[in-house]
Length: 352
Image (tube, rainbow, N blue to C red):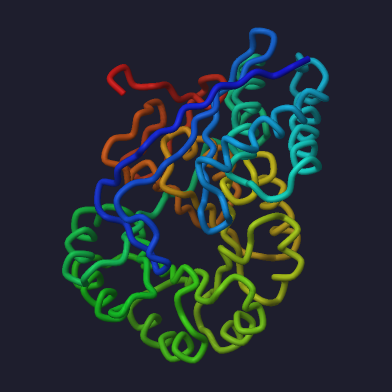
């Protein structure tokens, strides 16, 4: 039985310029929608290519035929929940066996398969996979800019329970001071591999003074001895993001960091993310669920496992000037409101 799919490339301008320490595109992101079909059943997914991991729109479109072809080994779509979960897990394994890495491309197909099964069984994905619709609130992320500009953006989103501040620029402490002047809640800092060990250690007391509650990926991805060194000297939790891509990475991070950031675009979708979360729990690691600057398709997919983590950084669609999808709503308490709609529960806006 053959799956057929179509793709659509979306250019998504940001609400505000969004720069991180690696100087990636600050104005817009590009993402690939995947519409999957087999025997009249359909599903929607989003493939978000992350350049840091060698993915682009071009590589995504190049590998999708190989990944979709691997899925042809799956049997018929199951008619009950328990065998459907086995079917979905096998789908993720088939894609992993045929091609390493390419988490963004796998994310799109894995999400579309979950959407397809959820629609066929009349279940929202969170109910299908056994998670909950009660989620932690999400924070809101602010990119690197001059301190006054970051502070003004912080003022606009001060109703969020926590703010995540991108650092690794020339004025980190000045920026955090400016944000603290307009926002009283917890701050989370993300260096995106932009710091060096001695400088990071010197910053920790200042970060604690300013009410920072965690530090995300201070050093380059494979600087694990340095991460362990900083953790031993830090009063704040040290979280791994770029160092924690797949479930297989968790073993080497045990004792090195306090927690990990799981993203569907890194690990390959809903199923792999849930497996990674459960393994991290077994190792005693704290968990943050993050995202890229995705549409509501990608954010809704991540929200299906969001009940399982400690911190939520699931704001990608909120950073867009105009999200082309509806159906995923943020409540006044900054918690994503999952519905009982089958599958992902999102739809294309009529004017998008």
